[in-house]
Amino acid sequence: MRNYSIEDFTGKTDSLYRLVIVAARRANQISRTDSRPLVSSRSRKPTMIALEEILDGKVSHTTDKSDAEAYLE
Image (cartoon, rainbow, N blue to C red; front, side, top):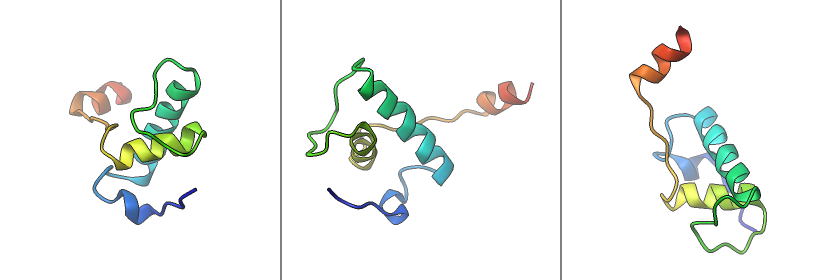
């Protein structure tokens, strides 16, 4: 099993907080078997698979100004 550091995810997300949210949501999808892993992984843990998918660029996030405005309303 590979150990990941924050530097590995530089340029993949805009903040550590967003990385945690995206990885958690993707891991939840994988664990519920709604979707299959997008990468081949030696790990069986959904969180590790989600992090590997983010590193490979298979999973990303989008932000929009309207998202922030809707949250503040």
